[in-house]
Length: 275
Image (cartoon, rainbow, N blue to C red; front, side, top):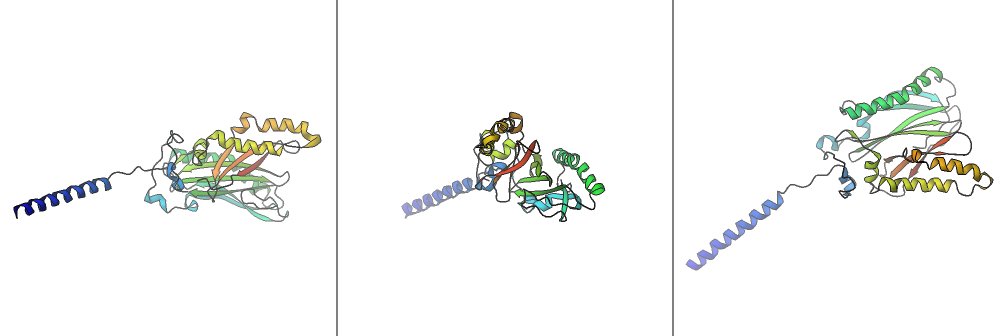
């Protein structure tokens, strides 16, 4: 009897110890992520070693790009210019299109970095929109300006395209923002989310530029100068990156050509989902 009692007490103590251990392991704090957790792809610490971001919060989980980016100026003009961003073809000269200027929504964004982004956008586009309203309110307009805003997890991308219809040519502005920390992301941080170094990302664009200049026949001597300018350090350092709504990395870049405008804008969409 006494022996059974001792065995029973031992079993109870053993169970209590096991339950305590399970309880402790279950309450262990979990490492929170920020940019490294996007899309469930945990990036190695050395890739984002200089990046500090906040973990996602309830306040931002249900937000959309439309909540975070607002149109602050808008006008309609007659322009045949399509947009590379949306894949639109050119229309006729009487096509009525809407031009829009974006800004980060100040009801949500309160940081100095966000204020600086809005200042840059306004500085870059205010004259263009003044022109739309005073010189192109009716009749043919050689320019079209519009934007896309894409939210992938906590990375918000604003991409602005101004497209000329006469040449044709596109000019891009790209801003990537971590909506948790409300800080602007560098292009190194953006491509790191795709598991690439900035050198690897740039090489894919320079490979595309090299391909463009292959086998131009009698124009090759002129093309070599344009190619050299396109691959110059200054031009490569100006490549911009963002993620589209298919979570693919996209490069916005300029290249020199042998005729027409000195430089042209283009987009290179990477083949697979990378975010």
